Image (cartoon, rainbow, N blue to C red; front, side, top):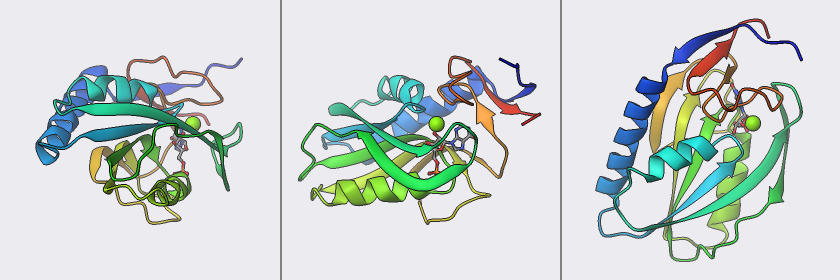
Length: 175
Ligand code: IMP
Ligand code: MG
């Protein structure tokens, strides 16, 4: 496999600092609540693991896997569920945990799916908000970093299943 040329965009130190303050913000806004975090696989697994260690209100964790990407870097436009949510969400405070919002297609379809269960509230927490290619409105309640365009990898994010393990978030320079 060819190694892509990469440049660090957000260092591991910057990421952990942002994630810690997101955890604190969630804890403040949800004082007295019980939350259910829905982690969108696979990209958000590392973010979720670091985030929940800074959340001080009681919470459950569940996972969903949606496929909207093929093997490249462009969204295919159709979203299918390949691993569904297992916890009941009716009457509960749900926070969707995403790695990155790009076109917004994945999130808007997941949001509809969750709202159909009648939760008390639904919020979105994304590590990265990539605003340059938005096709569907997907306003996030908690945002780690805002970027315009470019393809990034590391800290859970992949290119063709590679580089999820990188501790820093890097831009691929020769896509
Ligand atoms: P959307 O449906 O276009 O918003 O796509 C969201 C999903 O696409 C994310 O959860 C990621 O898995 C993937 N994605 C979008 N942009 C990037 C990127 O720059 N690097 C890695 N994955 C990305
Ligand atoms: Mg992905």
